[in-house]
Length: 292
Image (tube, rainbow, N blue to C red; front, side, top):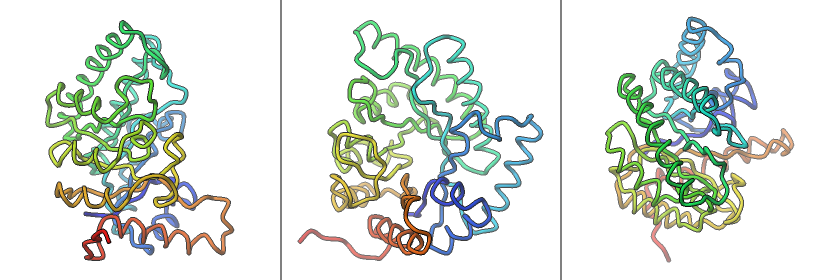
């Protein structure tokens, strides 16, 4: 199992070159590339030739630092804006471009969220049925682009308890229904905690067949805070046990970071400590981490 972290923790904070150097010096082998999330950012202002040139430049720099891009994250807007056909068409175009970008980066995994045509609150039965139908149609087209680009689309569980598709069991049911080797699950541990689910139980439910990627972080069981592991409610030993049980051989990828407010002179020590935490969860120290 490789150990990774999202781009915001190092590359956004320190810049691409210095961030990669710091990442590698702290021990990380893999990157969750999240520069596709913001479609108002610089990547999406480029024409197709410029988009390709810039991604190939970044790919070379990342590879030259001995880091693999294990997953990317597709466009996400908060609050959701999937209400009209025009909204959904714009989002689809950016999602498709992100799949092509993921392939250019030499990566096989793109993580996406469901579309939310009625927002993320309580849904009527009719709205729930419509939401599922629109996701089937939307994701079906994305899966085909993923197949063409040889990129697996990873469907992420969500942190909104009112949303029918949010829990991991519903996420898995939807992925099974789509029935494609190019459509798997990204398990977000913090999102699972906010819907009252045990991330370890979710790992066992998904199994190696459907669990493709991870977003690892902690919270208080109510809010999607993206805390560092061992600072919230999640049982990390049980989570580590579950990954070992199913033989997960992907990347243990953190979607958290040392807070920016930490003084510069203390931050690196805490960044190294964070790496040691995920190293332990991934069992890279060779221990079995048996319960006492």
